[in-house]
Length: 412
Ligand SMILES: Cc1cc2nc3c(=O)[nH]c(=O)nc-3n(C[C@H](O)[C@H](O)[C@H](O)COP(=O)(O)OP(=O)(O)OC[C@H]3O[C@@H](n4cnc5c(N)ncnc54)[C@H](O)[C@@H]3O)c2cc1C
Image 1: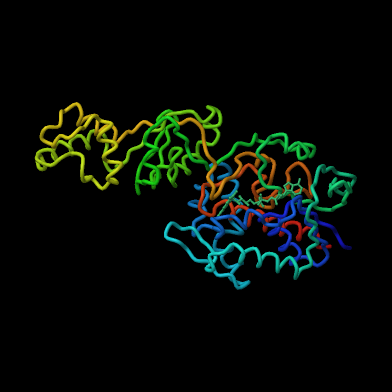
Image 2 (image 1 turned 30 degrees about the vertical axis):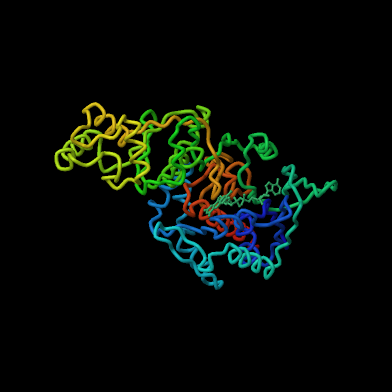
């Protein structure tokens, strides 16, 4: 007996679910309903057009640590489809991935089109019925079937299915999840994750383009710190350390309307105290040299000069530097207070924190714990990772798990 499985959403997780399901079960008709005119739109623009497909990691526990929300959920899910499986899946279809030194994995072609073509070829080969410009507006159970309301322009239609996989990605507004609430599921309120910090009132933004390769950014009130590259932009600060911090603090920052103070240690191998002592020693050995001029500790010259002037340094040599100014300099280098007012979405990658509560979904199958034969995959779940290929890995894993479980359930 032929069964029908409808996948709602033609993004990474929906298409991955659909093609694996269509390949693994001959007696299932697989339909994808996609509201926009384009499939895999985010894959196309992801990773600056190169698509950061996954992260090079062979330890599930380590990988799970990269998910500010959903860590326990992905840890269970990854057991049967993990990042090495993603690499193999694409390799067996002729798509080789390469690893960059920070662990991010891209197709060797450096083009997201390679990933898209591979996925769409499979969809074609296994005859997935793809219906674009078809938005789903309602979903309910009718006896043993699912009834799905769709809108295609002005045409409203109902589609019937035995299995439904919701792969609609993240929505910025809570009301956009309303049609899913009808299934009885709870929605964790959505907030954005992966953003950069605006500091409109701090003149440090005049140094835009300057970066510190290794800086530490911390917010003592939330007992959190991140170390890594920090880039000064014309609106504030960006760079991997900032973006990672934004992911961990997505909810706290939203709650305070993105207004807080962060402290930057531009030379994190020093504490304020140890840097004071270092400056003291430096003053003894380099007394005749001017403080402003060449940056003595590996900071960009312009950043050093800015910090020194802000501390009150004028044209003095190290020997003539007043102790109070020297101490102020040590403080600004190791604990620079930056007042944050607002955020800017990181253009390379942004995700929604929040969505379908993971407590209501089985991580081994992606099936709803409330409604049999209803599945959730990808970003629609309250799961999100930091940047580096983690969000796509969750999309592939959850898509594959739903496909396998639906396939298992259709063997009759
Ligand atoms: C600019 C950008 C770059 C990114 N780069 C990376 C990266 O390099 N690596 C990485 O790991 N992550 C990256 N991400 C995150 C990653 O793209 C997402 O986490 C991932 O695409 C989620 O997949 P998904 O299938 O769950 O959702 P999506 O890819 O968002 O797909 C959901 C689909 O469902 C459709 N849809 C929504 N509602 C309905 C409805 N009611 N009816 C029908 N269709 C509907 C949408 O139109 C969309 O096509 C990036 C994100 C952005 C925005």
